[in-house]
Every structure is written in C-alpha cells, then in structure tokens.
Picture 1 (spheres, rainbow, N blue to C red):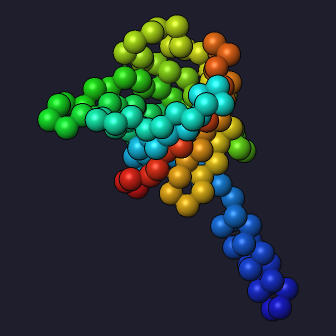
Picture 2 (picture 1 turned 45 degrees about the vertical axis):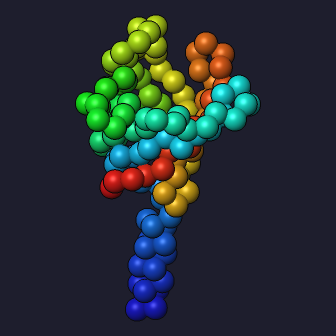
Length: 132
C-alpha cells in the first residue's frame, strides 16, 4: 500500500511539472529587445496574439478602429522550443512558410520568446497573458 501511494504521488508530481503543450489564450505585447536594444511596447495601439491549440493570429488594436490582423500561422512546442510558421502576413510575404525557431518560457502570466530571425535580427519579446 505504501508503494502504491508513493507511486501515485510521484506520478502526480511528474505530471504537474511537465509543460503544457499549448500557448492557448490571448497575449499582449509588452516590449522586448531588438538586436539587444530595448524595444518598448508601442504607444497609441496594442499588439495581441491569439493562440489556439496549434495556431495563432496576431492583431494590431487601436481605440476606435477595427482590429487589423497582421500575421497568422501554426506553431508547435517541443521542450523549450516554439516552432512557428506564418501562413499569412499583411506586410512582407518573405516570411510566409518559413520556420522560425523560438526559445520560449512562460513565467507566471508572461511569455518570453527569443530567436534569431531568418534575416539575422535577434529578438526577445515579452507577452502578457490577458485571456485564458
């Protein structure tokens, strides 16, 4: 009986320490770094990412205006890596279909994304979860 209780406790601890395999929810950009220079969150509008189990859509939100979708795509999580593939981009089409490999972590209600983009730029983004 004691072994059974220990086994059940061990399984509970291991399952609660594993990362969720989704970023599901709505996240708002709170700033970051671009090529090691501080990049504050924009003033006058906000940026949000809405993640589902496997996909995402990114929006610009400005008071009194309709939301503008500027990116969409698919993602997958493997360990501490988030692989994103854009399927839509409002501006440049050169990133559509390109895999971007982010190192990611979630601490409390903040998502940290770090990557070297295909154009060589280094980014570190901070996104705060605003909706589950």
